[in-house]
Image (cartoon, rainbow, N blue to C red; front, top):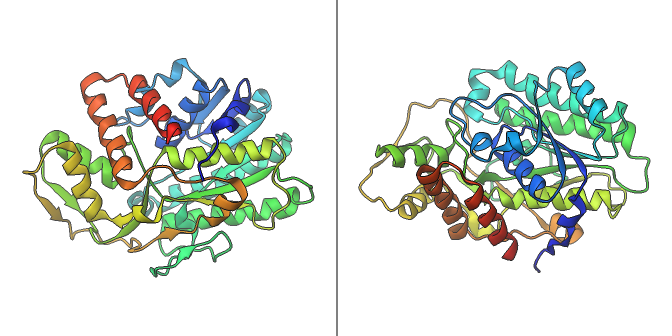
Length: 358
């Protein structure tokens, strides 16, 4: 089953707010929506010093951008009230596991209070629709071969995971308190796996760390090479979020006691960190670098995690499109283009088009 692309036309001239636009997924989503003809308002912190995506995509010239911390409810509410969006895509988050150990309060503050603020400003301003993005880390992961379903137990053994589980619990609370007494859904949460792709330069993320090592011709250090993750290109979950948003806008989703959807890759994409590393190195074209194990890391990381995506397949007619080889090639090709050209709109447009043709 191939996902039909016609749903993307529903965003033309739509007034859309995206939170987290200076981040990896948020920047890609804002760029894609802008290309679809949407009137995009971005809300995020200023891009970090090592960030390349927001600038290289020239998003400042494409969207109406506000630099704001979502933990500030009053400023957030002011913007939402002024903008009056047709739909909100909430992606803003503190998204790094290692940072959640170094800065636990900041992580909880952003991922829990910030997300609650988005829900509250959505509620009080009576915005029509909301797609609320969390993470596959929201599930209580027991490191088994289980593929987690949307109705599985939420929880977390580390600060990041528990912050995402808490964000989902707050979403559930708001849904049951304010939004469930409707024939058609107006809100939905989305959970995606390990997302990779061009433009991510965050510290302590495996693919950006590999790319930086390759660019500088340095050996690659891995914390947990045997850890298995559901790897997917950034366009995979974004296509799911956009499809989910379309289903809300067109009133195609009836009441659901758990209005959440997993967006994960094909099962063959669930590979170890070590496997992914060798794949990236091969695609880059270097074979002389050594891969070393960094045993200094003390924090907990899940060894095994995968998602069940049958609900998205059945109810949304959504399917992942790229296999692992294509996912890695898309990612490496983007970085190579960036290091040679700096402006990356051409390669980004090309990859979006190629993805949609799959």
